[in-house]
Length: 323
Image (cartoon, rainbow, N blue to C red; front, side):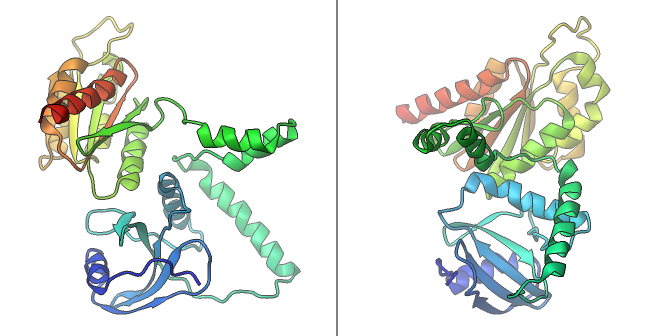
């Protein structure tokens, strides 16, 4: 069977209500499948599939797969579309499990596939690869690495140990730690597209948390030239903090400022906290005084921004220990 986690009626009703789909009319467990818990939901506005991702699924991979599903659907492929709730979230938590709601597709399982079915699968896979070419999120392909290592003659035990102990790539959505209920990430993102995609990845990885986008702009000329694009990307977070601009080799420090970028963000989103506290040190101090349990802090930039993440965690550890 494929229902491993039962969902209490009141939790399910509250979950569905947040999607604006009308009243829940029925809910039935789906027997097929072996990995996750799946339910067929019938609401006033249609039928949907509810999936609760069980512990065998790596939670950090879910933003990639859910995001890719939405991307392929928008590209015109006939695949389920993740449904966003009233807070624009595609990934939620239900009954203690990561959960997603997707549209229901009519169709039957082909039990005896023929050559024409295989040809159709090949055509669809080609269309899928073409449609996914401009998908911005990335995911580590452990199977590809394992296959290459095996070809090179490495023992399978060494391959498994290497994959199990690999900590990831530094400054690429790197989870620096958690203290006082605050999760802190560090990322090298320093242009508008990367900033927007990384904020979305953290939002999907940490559903239900308030997302802080903390950004140290890289060079004055880049900031001035793309200030509106930076402001629009940063404004997709729930709170924004801008550290002083990292000049690098930029000789003109008068054409842009952290405060100016913060003003643009505040104009775009007057409903969220926006601040420009100063240096990276001042920024970490300000954050330590303003974040709260349940928040997720994403630090981005290409200069000294990495110090904000480590210093913030140290400050939160110290404050927690002194209480």
